[in-house]
Length: 403
Image (cartoon, rainbow, N blue to C red; front, side, top):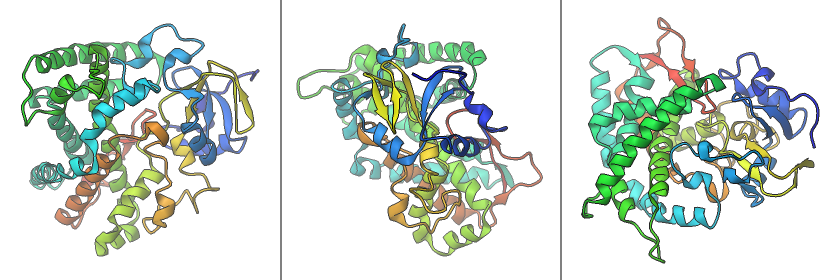
């Protein structure tokens, strides 16, 4: 077992949330698995290299259910309800199968027209001025409108929901726990009422996703329990927009910082898919995968980890591993697509992100529309500098632009 002082993850770089990659490089130089203390104060085993992270993501000895933790006391780690991100087979298999049919490539493609309409309306509003914060004016409202419409959250409630979501995911220190607890309670009350209303309403052909899930059953006629439906609703709503907000704003930020690549993309729209994949590799919307717990003592990358330990898999570090990616600290939209598709931004294995194709679609629409409508799009150097969120999500709080 590891002994001695456990360093803080954020101490490995002076401005961790602005540039976590300096910290990850320093830690990786010491070995692929390191014992560190997370921003919430908890000691973990941090996995850093591509091969070790990819292997761990598919290792059944690493469980997502926090009840495998030696320090488990209650379900406070599950936020709102029990969701499939916090479950292992066979529960995970059952939960995922009930919702997966709503996120097939065919179903996602059917959403394109509505996503393009939302994007066009937002850009029409933006075009009435000479500049704006891209995050607040576009990167947030595009995916949150899309996912709330898909799930059936009334428009009047979306601003409140966004506020709760931000308080939950931007918690970077233990002092913020009370704020997160208040947001959790409010979101739980809201979703419980919304779900109850949908449970008691007959299912129609044009039913929204939460309505469908409230009535869904698997091949054995099993339905989601109230707690599972609550957890599923929470996961789909939060994960369904937070990652895409970060993906859109990061892609625009990276392109505007590199005029040559921006010009190349404008000249060749065929580079759009690769631009999205390279953004996912270079600035993954989530720095780390959902926490894992060792169901038994195990060895990972020659490091012995006892049973009941918390293991954190750094997707961001893996995506910059020089043993897997050529010149990994360079953003390059011409990078070989085969290499690009190896990125782990959406995880790997049975917990690969269910909404990955929806996020890609929204990012593709966003970049297409922004570049077509604003040929002089640029960073606003007269406004405050872009600001990164103090979170283990990887995204900008603010991105001032002019056009």
